[in-house]
Each structure stands twice: as structure tokens, then as C-alpha cells.
Image 1 (cartoon, rainbow, N blue to C red):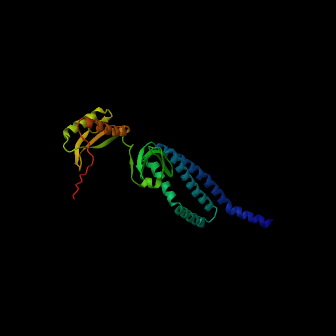
Image 2 (cartoon, rainbow, N blue to C red; image 1 turned 120 degrees about the vertical axis):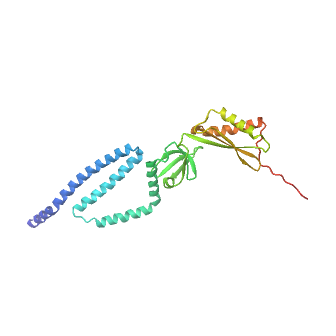
Image 3 (cartoon, rainbow, N blue to C red; image 1 turned 90 degrees about the vertical axis):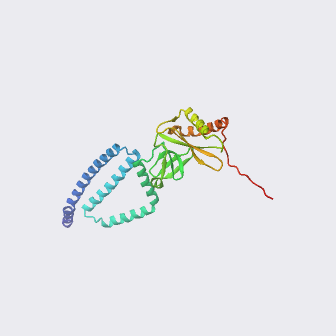
Length: 268
């Protein structure tokens, strides 16, 4: 018993101060981590970071800081952590290589949520798909096409590839090309087009007035280019309506809309 008491006394003498120091370090460290997470959360909120990304990043940073704190606390008690850290690093490398595609999508999702190249409700064309953004997840972005199809695009390629966002600007230019037959009056065609443009109240003169000019002397037609400006919400309405009105009005005004023709000569 006396020998056991001496051993216990030696253990307490050696490890007692280390244990007390480790507990104090753990308590103070957890308190500091809590303060840092609250400050980080306020900073994210000031920067208008997406709420889902805000919570995810806060949790990941908290886990990383707590892991570092526990490693330091265990090391203070005399436990050799070098081998453990090496094994942990090897495991992390193996997992990272196995999940390289998933991690790329995760990183892409973080970049999209941070820099916001598009938002929910925007109409975008990316990765060969066009549609309205219905949801931005951490790994994927979900689009809804005009015919109500659901398209899931991984964020990795979406964050690094080219993309067209049609909803960024409030105004868009609508471009047309109309052809008339050779021999038709070009000036009259311009007058008819200008009259149709002025009759549509959705067409605006800001940032530029309507533009009409001969753009090409094609094989079967004289092509006129028409450029008008409109609110983005009116783009497709103007596009479809003006095509229909031009087709109906040209015929009434004696202007011919040609189509490709070919003369075939038969020789015996």
C-alpha cells in the first residue's frame, strides 16, 4: 500500500499540473472559439453572405478550431501527437483524392454563394443549358427550363466555366433581321419598320433610339438589321410580335419577303 501510495503521489505530482493546465486551456480555448464564431457570424451577416453558406462555414471553422484545440490540449498532457497528426494528414489526403470531384463542386458552391454571379430567379445560360435558377445548393445549382424541366448542374464546372446571365441588366437590346426582295423599295421598307416600332409602346429610346440599316446583300434578299431597346421583361413579347407584324404589314405594303430559290437548267 505504501508503494502504491508513492506511485499515485508521483503520478499526481507529474500529471496533476499538466491536467489542470490542459483543462484551463480547454475552457479558455472553447470560450475564445465561441467569441470568434459569433464575430465571424456578425461579419458574414454584414457582408450579406447567403444564410446557408453562413451557417456551413461557421460550423466548419468551429470544427477546425476545436480540433486544433484538442490536439494542443492532449499534447500538453504529454501524449505524443506527431504520429497521430501524420496519420490524420494521410487519411485527409486519401479522402481528398477520392472525393476530388465532390470537393471541386463544394468549392464551386462556396465561390458562387460568396461572389453571387447569379441569384435565384435569374435566367442564365451555362454549361450548355438555359433556364431560371430555382435553387443554389452547396454542391449543385438547379435550373428550371421554360418548358418546366429540371436541370441539375454541378457547381465545379459552373463556377469556372463561362456563363451568360440575362437578368443582370434591366434593359436589353432586341435584334432583328428582315429581308426584302431585290427590286423592292428599301426606303419604304425602313418607313414601314419604323412605323411598326413606334406603334409598340414597349420599345424605349433609352439608351439608344431604334436603329434600321441595310446589313447584307444576300443571295436571295436585301437584309435589313433592326435594333431596338426594351425592358428585359418585354424582350420576348417584342421579339415575337414584331416578327408577326412585319410579316402581315409587308404583304399589305407590297414588300416581298423572299425565300431561297434555285433555277435549274436541263440540257440534252
